[in-house]
Length: 190
View 1 (tube, rainbow, N blue to C red):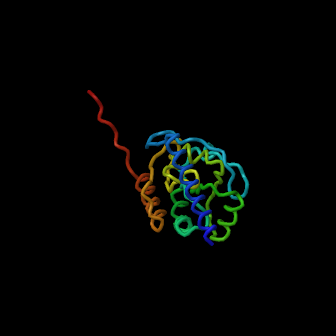
View 2: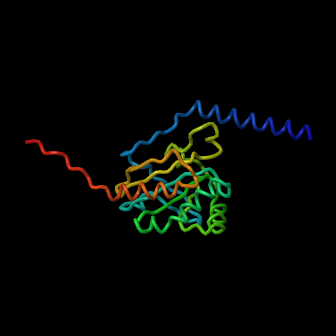
View 3: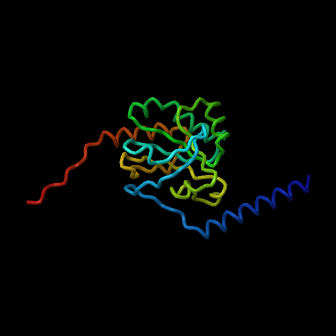
C-alpha cells in the first residue's frame, strides 16, 4: 500500500511540474470582445467535422468545459439542455468543447439527452486558440469559459466567472440583452 501512495505522489508531482513548465513556456491567449473568433475544425459527437465558418451569419455560444461525466460539467451541460429552447428561440447555436474523445461525447450526449453539439478537441489546439487553457492543469483540462460569437464571427461576450448551476441561464439572459439592445448611433459632426 505504501508503494501505491509513493507511486501516486510521484505521478502527481510529475504532472504538476509538467503543467508548471508548460505554463511558464507558453503565453496564454487572451481574447477580447470585438476580436475575430479563431476558426476551428473539430469532430462532433457523431464524428462529423465542424468548423466555425459553417455557423457564419448566426449567433453561436461556444462553451469550454473540463471533462464529460464529472459533477460540475454534467450540471453545466444539463443547464444548457434545460435552457435549450430559449437558445433556439433566440436562434443561437450552442456548442460544448472539451478534450474528451468523439466516443466519450457520443455517450455523454446520449446519457443526458443533450440536444446541442459537442466537439472533441483532443489535440487541445482550439482551447489554446481561445485561451481556454489557463491555469496549472491546462495540459489536462480546458478552462471553464464561454464565448458568444456574433454573426460576423467576432466575439460579442466572454463569460469567465462560471457558476455551473446557473451558467446556461446567465448566458441566455445575456444573449437576450445583447440581441435586443438598440445600437446607439454616433452623433453627427456638423
